[in-house]
Length: 216
Image: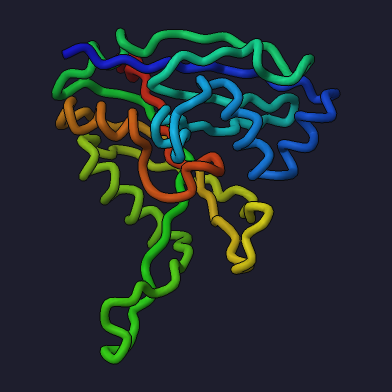
């Protein structure tokens, strides 16, 4: 069976008012990027499209990486939003082999569930953000379960975000991880790339980017 997905790389126009708005508001960024996928995808369009995204920022520019299992139409973005390049990810999935050395990048929302007393059995505790070594261990466990053996880990804490309209006051704590690893289970890793890893996928987390590691 052939596995396919589309990746769009949007180099954002810093002078666009829509871009400035979206970079301040995670909910609005999600809405803008959902314009890329087809209409009529049902009650859960992000899930139906397997749409994931990540914002990569440098001192000079901001780029949004968008991935979906449906076609992406950059013409539906606001006028002047940015320059978009798209590519088919089928060759990448076809290249996944056990033992392949790769470089990776991902933004994740590492959390653990609060333990509740016995009299609250059956209820879910609050999601507690993880940081430092606890977050690093969380990522290593999730990567291993996703078919990727981690060799190096470089964490970069990002500014927490809170989606507009959420009344809980909880902020989504985000950490970017870069490093190298080894493919241990190509099928499981393909599924993880397509569906994302962890929580807060509507707010820029979960998209795992992979590329072959340079030979030593």
